[in-house]
Length: 245
Ligand code: IPE
Ligand code: IPE
Ligand code: MG
Image (tube, rainbow, N blue to C red; front, side, top):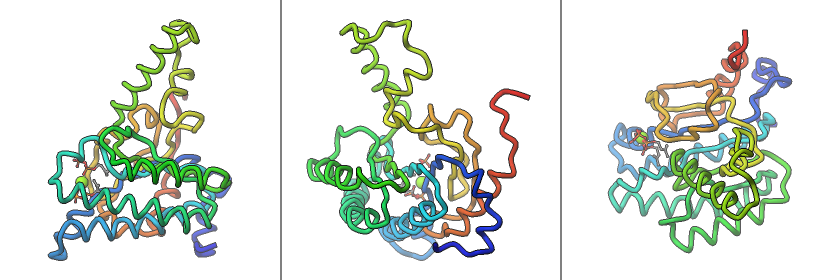
């Protein structure tokens, strides 16, 4: 275990959030402050991600979803998009070795449309390679948009109505969830966003309906395991009512 004994005592291990979502923001500003190109911020961000996944797995978190590339991020300059895609490809390749050794189950969530064949193949390979692992499930939200996810779920549900597999009246909140990328996974309990921005930017619109939100001004490459501890401890000090009293 990598986390210190002291912190271990502070986190209540019997009340961990089951699913943590992270909007990893601020790579560009991190680089700018250092007079570096934005790409350097993205590389530093990828390093940060490795440490946080390892830590979350060690703590015993069951699911983590990290926002790596949104359906809106295609608006960025081609150079930056290409760099992000090459980093993601490297990440998936390395994850197959290193994170799999740590028993992590890796899944990519998002649309395949617009992704290169190379990335799609690597996603399939990494998902298959890690599917038998039993540790934390890591969803990498890649070419992901919450609205796209809901629209795509609606299309699939409609197709099942047309083919007679389900009837319109069967569609409720529970059944609809099974058409989402996060099928069979619990909703997000704790949503973390770095860099001081306080918005969802199209992240997991369905799954965060009752998530506790936690914001920090720290930029993603500066986000450390100790910050994850802090977020979890704050989460455990909140009263969740889910509409009750
Ligand atoms: C987050 O950092 C990473 C991605 C969106 C891929 P940004 O690149 O958005 O960094 P800032 O917000 O410009 O600082
Ligand atoms: C959200 O960050 C997307 C990811 C972290 C991958 P952005 O930097 O793209 O979001 P906005 O543009 O500030 O809302
Ligand atoms: Mg940003």
